[in-house]
Every structure is written in C-alpha cells, then in structure tokens.
Amino acid sequence: MYPTTPQDSPATTRPDHHNQAGNLLPWLTLAHIPGMHSRLFNRLLETFHDPVSVLAAEPGQLVRAGVNDDTARCIRNAGQGRMGDDVKKAVDNALSWKEQGRQHIITLHDPQYPGLLATIPDPPPVLYVKGDPTLPGKAMIAMVGSRRPTVDGRRNARHFAGEIAAHGLGICSGLALGIDVESHRGTLAENGKTVAVLGTGIDEIYPAGNREMFARVAEQGALVSEFNPGTLPRPENFPRRNRIISGLSLGVLVVEAGLKSGSMITAKLALEQGREVFAIPGSIHNPMARGCHRLIAEGAKLVEQAREILEECAAPYQGASVSTTCKHDHADTSGHSLDAVQQQILALIGRDPVFTDVLVSESALPVTQVSAALAELEMLGLVRREGGGFVISNDWA
Image (cartoon, rainbow, N blue to C red; front, side, top):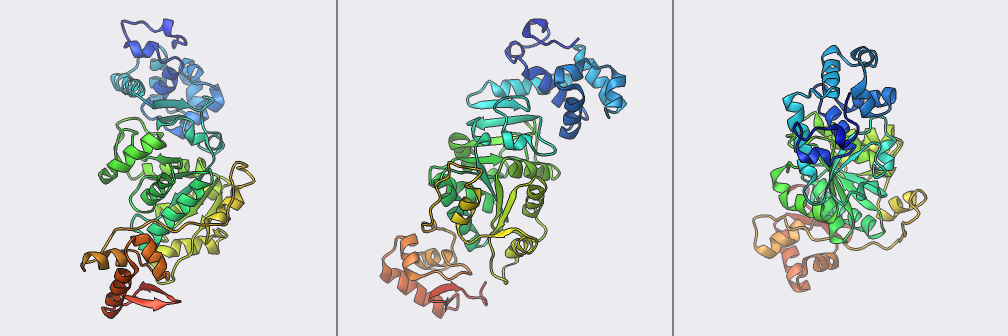
C-alpha cells in the first residue's frame, strides 16, 4: 500500500524531507512516472479522485482508465514502495528544490491553485512556483507577441503593461525575448505584479540572456512552470506553456505577431478557454502586425488604448480602477551607427508618428539637441515627417 502519512514512510528508505512533504509525495511520485503527462494525470484524477488512490489501484483498473501496460506496472510498483531509481531521484530533486527560499509546489487540489487555471480543459496537476505563490491566482492580463518586435511593438508592450499594472491587474507573459520581456519590464517599472510562465524547468533560465529579468520577476512577482526542475528547453513544451499563460488570465493581448507564431497559438488557446482576445493593429507594411490583423478579422477586439482592456475586464475584476489617462511610453535604447544623440532619437522612432515633444520627454535631452538630430536624420533619409510627427523612412526600414 502506498504511504498516506509520513509515519508510513520508513526513514531508512527515504530522505528526511520526504517525511516533511505531507501530501506532496503521491502527487510528485505520480507526476514523475515514466509515460505520465498532464492529460493522463487528469484522466486518472477523474477516475480515482486523488493520487493516493491512483497509486493503490490494480494494474487492470489502470489499464481500463487508459493507461498502457508499462505505465500501469510503474504506477503499481511505486504504489507498493518500489519506485524506480529515476523516479526517486526526480522526486528527491523536486522536494529539495522546494526547501529553498520562496519556492513552492502547488497541486491541483491545493487551495492556492489558481482558480482560473483549474477551469481549462487540461490544467497542469502540479505547478512549481518561485516567488509569490498567491500571485498566479490573482486577476491578470496575458501579453504575448513577437521575439523580434519593432520599436513600436516594444514601446506598446511596455506602455500597455505599465498602464494595466498601474490599475491593479497583473501581467502574465512567457519571459521570451521581445514582447514578453518588454511586458514584464513595463509592469515592473510601475511596481506592478507580473507572472512569467516557463517552458522549461523552474530552475532553467532560457534564453540565457534573460538572467536579469528572471531574477527580477522571481523577486517582485512569480515564475511558474509545470515542468519538473531540470527540464531543458524542448520545442514541444512551449505550446503547453502557452495554454498556462492564457489559462491564468482574464484575457490575452497580442501586441505584435506573425501569422505563424506561438502568439497565435496562445490566442487560439485563449478562445478555446473562453478568454477574451485583444489585438493591437499596426502598419500594413509591418509583417509583425499581420497576425494581429488576422485575429481582428476573426473577431479579436481591436484596442488602441489600455483603458479599453481595463473597461472590458472591470466586470470580472471589480478591483480595477479604470482611467482614461495614459502615460508616455518608456524610452528605448536600441540605436543605429550615428552619433550618440542621433542613435538615441532614431531608436525612439517607429512606424507610427512620434512628436518632437514626446521625443524630448523620452530622451531627456534638450529640445535643441533633439531638433538638430531630427533634422540630420531627415536629411539622411532615415526618418520622414508624417501627421505632424516623425516616422522611420520606408526606404530605410
């Protein structure tokens, strides 16, 4: 019989932290069985109600529940205390990870399990959380988009995230390069709460260039993963990660996306989960806007201001204080091979008109320097005037 209390687990065969794990042990044991995945785990929970009952089941019962013969034998052996070495090692690693500061393991039956996520068709049975364990259960908006966004895309991500976060909603994204990171950055700039859902083990920083943001989100928000600690990045894991991003959220905002992208997958999952989908329109010349335009054509809500999202989500989230006043975007520091001031100004100009006073505000440079840089950039054909402001020249872009 599988142990249901710490006293049933002999100290001679398990490390001490197993005795402190309480009801986590059957969940982790079942999660690490070879061949186990979330859909099968959930199917077994529907049939047997809890992991202890699954581990106590006869092989024939497990097979009738949809488990293949090999996995059924592994489950039965684990339930009788004969866990394989790989399973023991994985469970030990997970429990050791949990013992470190601000690191948590939350199961589907835990009161802290995010309520919205529990309603999706395939909720992860086990969540690993680094940071604030209550944050994934708070009201949030997901923000997703291209890993290679335009200047306007980066600016919009920071701006919308900051505005939404300033009014009490959290921001959920995937800590990928591009729109994801800018969304987290915009949230943190407003001292808002942000959740990053990983497609790797909770202890794996991917991509490596996100090390600093990884640490900031863990400190000021929460990192979340359904994958066991030590799980390396695999392409098939990221679509699964995306269902959690949408599942945790009241709605999904697509900032910029190509027609074939992970962001489009997230939007599709959001619709299947009954979530709202919002999209920011862009230039018809911007290939990263085509995914947003497709979503809008298919029924996603076109948004131009963060307040439109706040107003839409104010009913399900009664704590949101909706305002029609928006702040200026934060500065972008990417540049071009010109002098330092010209690089700084060029980096702030995208495909939508930007006015001189905004450039002065964002660059913190004197108006004379900004005007001189704009004149030089215009003469070089890198920017042009449009609608009273400046945009990147199509010839250069």
